[in-house]
Length: 180
Length: 144
Image (cartoon, rainbow over all chains, first blue to last red):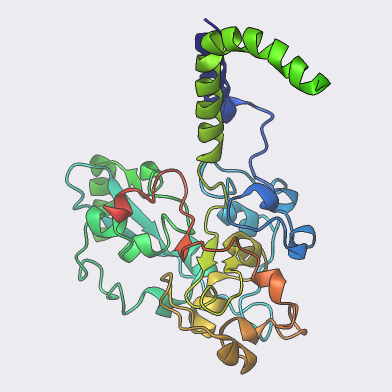
């Protein structure tokens, strides 16, 4: 009986952990599994919770909506080492309709050029011409193409609908509008 | 003598307790094991750089993407500096850094702390493998 109740206690505690509302979203560095808590730097390094808790939240990755954080001025990350600024944004959406039945992917240059330089994606791994580079979801899951960032630093690949965001019908309408 | 007799007295009762108590021991061990194998809970995007640190006898570097992207856009390091977007692809060493390459472009006491502050970057647990902390189970399929 005691064993059973202890086991139940252990498992219920584990099950409750993620859903607890007041559980901190960010582990202290000393308990993150990477940092060595015996080194003196542990008391000097900035704690993630200290700063990330104050940024617009999302449900994955660092639990931060980084695009909103930049758009609304919560953070002003420098664009060059020399000076602030020099951001060449491009407001151009590219659609990927060949998704084997999943919703069509809308790739927004606008958000990406807030962070990245054209040369980060062009000409490798993506040719400039839309449709010229062929890649699959498996490639992405293996860390190639979009997967170089998504699943490592940018929002993870479990967030399907953030990329597969346009129904095929909607895509056809958009394409028609563009052609007219 | 006193101690021996005490423990001797106890041992009979303890023997009885032990028979009933062994599942508790097993449970405690299981609980401890569960606590010990809890996965790494580092921040998403944290990079362990241990290409040569371990061999050189210094702790691995922990690079926090979250800390840096608050202050710099991706392109500063991944376009202006020469960081490849692939763990292990950057052949960094302290000589290169001292010449102002890679981390050394900022960690020079002007933009960020200088390279003499070893443990600020070499802050990882001994023996960690080079890796990036992907979040929410996405590191699974990428390794299949």
